[in-house]
Image (tube, rainbow, N blue to C red; front, side, top):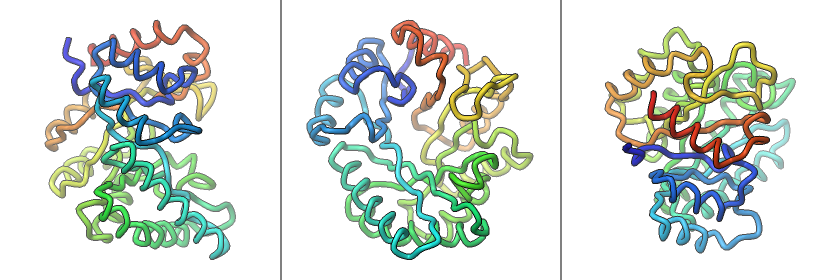
Length: 270
């Protein structure tokens, strides 16, 4: 069983501490780990990265930063400062990619929020380039357009990355957020041609779903055409990790070792 391209986000097994996640992922033969910043709270980030490497895991990304939008210039400046700190954390951890959930402000036009996002990424880009950290713009499902992200399609994310004009900026394709898009396959192909596809996040959309945030399913448990999407991603030349990112109150309550085996089985089947 080849798990060398399987990556798991620490948020997926949220009940585990970072050290337990490192131990269990490594023991299972998983290739990569994406670290959520709350898992690093109170820790020496550089030493955490060393522990990950010593366990034979590759740090795939650091999640998350972004949230650039606001009604006030002071809050937007504060967001930029926070993103600069996140870049430093990614570099110290050894994460090649910082995932950006870009933000949206209720009552503010989406067009303005998108302008603020692009301006914010442009402001942190020189520091990211100097640190060797790539920035991945993640498009979120339109249900989050009001308050979490004004970037809601893969096309919007790709266009923004192109306008920013740096090879350090690309996109994060989370199937949970973009599977519904009628232009998805064309945009995956375009993303591949442009070399902008930096990361792929896997989960599934359960039917019925009981919670838009915390009821994601294992791959194959819902309605997302994962096999077709993954074939398109492969055809686009993607050679990176497939990252399992599942927010689930149900799975967080179960035995996490058993859950990890379910993840491996679902990934293998896919």
